[in-house]
Image (tube, rainbow, N blue to C red):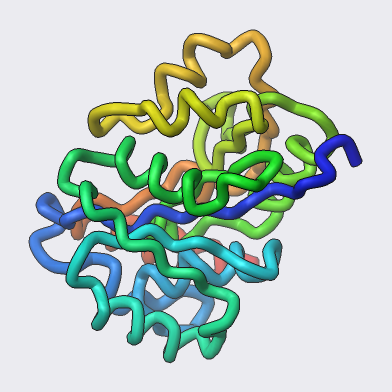
Length: 212
């Protein structure tokens, strides 16, 4: 293992759900016959891959944190970090999560609105970082998705991110060094922004279950 300090898991949950129309992260979602808040579905595969997961939230999120911790029954495994400047966009949340894990040898960044993300994608990106990749990301049909991973050398740049584009420009700038891991599961692309996204996901997953 070329990364002795380990890889930290950071999941972003500090958005404002404007396009969804309500708090999408607490919206009930049924997948594989189990109904949970959307964010709980999203966090389950992370808890399979990591002993501790840092979840970045906005100020005033105590109800959300308590609900998700109680639903998953894993309060010790979830580390809640409040990003005071979450209103400035995704970049601020990434910086908060990375800074909260500043001793790590690398960081995996995920989203709390991806309830169909397979655990295999998280493990695959994590292992790529552990094996020495500077950048890694899951992909489906050659489209880059989530999660994405950054080696230690990106620490200062991750802290200095600005705006709502997250770390996209780093991935695009250093694409030649990106280890892109292909997965058959389109869940690596399926983030939920609007109610229609959720309806399509539930229908697609239902069809998959019915034909399997």
